[in-house]
Image (cartoon, helix red, strand yellow):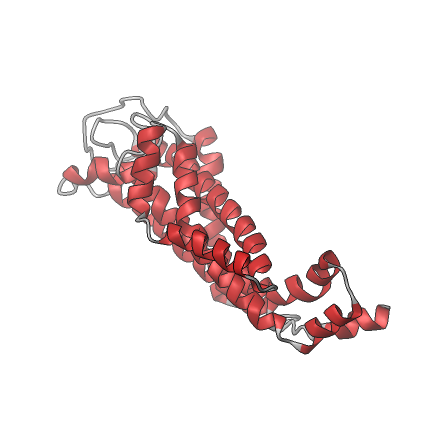
Length: 283
């Protein structure tokens, strides 16, 4: 049985023994920095996020490293407090989307039948609903709820994840070793563990990265629009909207959260691509 298992799925681990490229190290460092800022930031912030410490739109100085915002609050403190909701919401939405997408996509891609096709078509209906409209509807029903934002992001990105996984599973289903495993009568869990999931690791990683980038964009947009927990709670998306009127006086209040959002999204996307390439794929 051991020989059968080792020969059954010709996986190619193209990244084995390969040195990490500077791009991978840089993007991993950027992602780690954003996570550390968001999760540890509230513990090291010099001021409370709602504390008024000066006049509005003061330029950065030795006392306030990033200056003050539209209400005279310390920008550095609000940046350190405002990332947690973005990071946690994006990651939670990505996990939910990826798990459901994998289950439904594999179920639909590894089998045939009208019912499976009908389920996929029903999921596709969600893709026709604009993301902002869905967020606004859920926000109206559950005001000041970050959970509603997470649900809206997950529902918006789910159809695309299902389609990606389904397409990859369909390509894999036609391979000889999958047909041989089915002919031997291997159970579903055994087939998934040894033949399917190892060969879909690359596409699944890339898809999760895309969903995370989409989650960052949508949660930041929700904050920009004032959805979820509202003011005076700090939120990187809301900080951009609040401080744009003072752009001619000082750029730090809206530029700092913007840079962190860009670093988060770009690092997540690039790192997911690198992981997909290093794991390889037979699909």
